[in-house]
Length: 407
Image 1 (cartoon, one colour):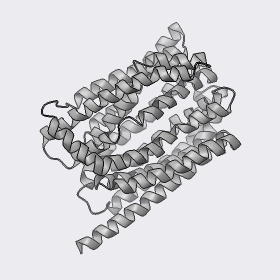
Image 2 (cartoon, one colour; image 1 turned 90 degrees about the vertical axis):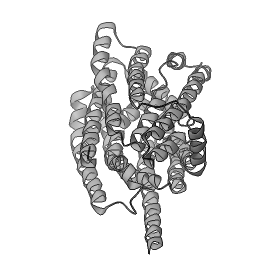
Image 3 (cartoon, helix red, strand yellow; image 1 turned 120 degrees about the vertical axis):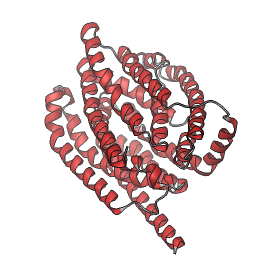
Image 4 (tube, rainbow, N blue to C red; image 1 turned 30 degrees about the horizontal axis):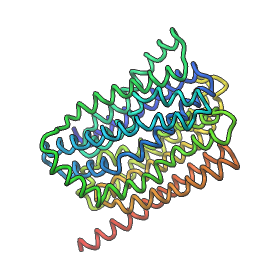
C-alpha cells in the first residue's frame, strides 16, 4: 500500500472515528446526568494518569527498533517482548484500582467505579501498544481499526442496552471499557507477536531504551500525565464533577483534531528515519489539511452541539471552539515529533515535552483555581503553542546540523 493511500485511509478512519466518538458521547450524556457523566470521566482521567507511568519508554523504543529493521521475524519478536511488558503493566494498573478506591472512600459512587474498573481498565495500555507497533511497523490498517472499531461497536450496543435496561455510571464503565478492551486484544493478536528467543531482543530493547526511550518517557511523564491534571483539578475546585464532564466532553470532540496532522508523521515514520529533512510538500500538505479541518470544525461545532446534545451541555461547543485551535497546533508539532523520534532524537523531544508539562502543571493548578474551566482552556492553548515552538526549534537545529555534516 502506498503512503498516499495509507494517509487517506488513516485520515478517513480518524475522521469517522471523531464522528463516532461524538455519537458515543451523545449516547453517554443522553442517559447520564452531568454529575454522573463527570464521575465516569474523572475515574477515566485517573486511570489514564496512572497508565502513563507504567511503560517506562519501552514501547517507544520498540517502535524505533521496528522502524529501522527489515527482518520480519525480528520485528515479531520485538512485539512479543512488548506484549510481555504490557502484561506486567496491566497487572500493576489493576492492583492500583483498590488503592484508588480507598483514596476516594469519602465519595462512595466514585470509589466503587475504581473497583468495578479492575477487569476493564487496561484499554489505555492496549491502545498505547497498538499505536506504537503500528507506527514502527507501518501497519496503518491496525491503527485505523483501533481508531474506528471501538466506537462502531459501542454506539449501537450502548444505545440498546441503556434504552432497555437503563444507564448507570457503573454499567457504562463496564460496557464501554469492556468493549474497548476486547477489541484491542483482538487487534493485538492480529499484530502477530512472536514469543520465541526473546532474551537477546530484551537486551537490545533495554539498550535502546536507555539511549532513547527513557528520554521520551521522562518527557511524557511531565507532559502526558499533566494532560489529565485539568480533569482532576476541576473536580477538586468544584462542588461536583459537572465541570469535569463539560471540559472532558469538549476534549473528546477536539482531541482527535491533533491526530489528523500527525497522521502524516505516523505514516511516514519508517521513511523519516532515512530522510535528512521532511519534504516541503509534506509540511505544506499537513498545514493545509490542519487549517481546513480547524475552520470546518469551528463553523460546525455550535449547531452540531445544539442539535445533538441537550441544553445542559450547550457550553461544550464554546469550550471546544477554543480548544480546537490548540489541538491543531499540537498536531502539527507531533509531525515534527515523529521525525525527530525516527532519528533517535529523544532528548530533544523530551525537552519539548517537559516545557509543555511544566506550563500545564502551573496552569492546571493556579489558573484553574483562579478562573475555573476558562483557566484550563487557556492553559491548554498556551501549552500547545509552547510544544510546537520547541519542536520547530529542535527540528531546525537537527536538520541544519545534518546538512552541515553531509557537506
